[in-house]
Amino acid sequence: MCHWYILIFCVCVYQLIEKLHEKWSPVKKKPYPAMYSSVFGGIILDPAMMVIPIDDHMVHRGHGVFDTGVILDGYLYELDAHLDRFLRSASKARITLPFPRSTLRSILVQLTAASQCKEGTLRYWLSAGPGNFLLSPAKCPTSAFYAVVIADVVSQCKSGVKVITSTIPMKAPQFATMKNVNYLPNVLSIMEAEDEGAYASIWVDDDGFIAEGPNVNVAFITNDKELILPSFDKILSGCTAKRLLELAPKLVEQGHLKSVKTANLTVMEAKSAAEMMYIGSTLPILPIIMWDEQPIGDGKVGDLTMALSDLLWHDMVAGPNTHRICVPY
Ligand SMILES: Cc1ncc(COP(=O)(O)O)c(C=O)c1O
Image (cartoon, rainbow, N blue to C red):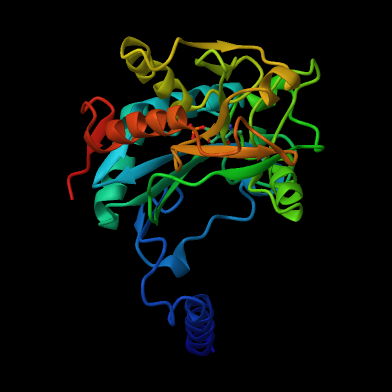
């Protein structure tokens, strides 16, 4: 009787694994070469096994934070800036770390090495962890850390896109300033833009100032050649935008830009800018040429936008090694 039970159990497990593999077996080049899960305590190379528990509070209550960085030429760009923001988000979401920062960092570097992926993204999540289906995480014994490497092409964006003003309400500053997994407003906002044939959207805050895009920051070049980024007090402080603010003064020294600053910008001021762009890890800069069917400047990709793009791109492929972490493959 007992042997029969074990046999049936093994057949069921085999069938389950077969079912999980069904989606992946015809796929030649797997898009997710490696995942780390603190629940398994190791790295998983089989995409069919890259799962997280359904009783994880991040799954059913959205109690989790995340971050994303780029892998380019076998280097992790701005890993420490992303990790710092990840820890700030975790603290705001009241999630304690399962390991010290140095261990999280080492897992991310080792995971990228195990993936053998030299170009793509590294995405990671910190969750209140598995435990139960209640609202309070009090009975979740330990937080969980998950990370995945996604193979993808990372290249400079050279053509311009259309954007619209979002009608989806933006998140309150407490939630917009931390990168938590509650991205429903962001998802609805990009869907709304796509419905209208635009690439993405622009959020305007309750005071009428420009905020950000659904998963990107935004920047403007005025007719006086000032580079202006909306202040970060009500939006996510983008690692790419922050790095751009460090690099852009070089264009001021060279006489191409007059100044570089963060400020509050009204819709009217923003719409009369000479150039406009999205800024984000995977872009790193995307020129915007049309907003609500109105051209920005002359409606063409701006020279200063591309100069800023070149500056960031150069930093990504050949910048100092404090900003590019070499992966030991
Ligand atoms: C809402 C939001 N704003 C801005 C950004 C840009 O941040 P980063 O440059 O760190 O990718 C992101 C992406 O993470 C985002 O989700």
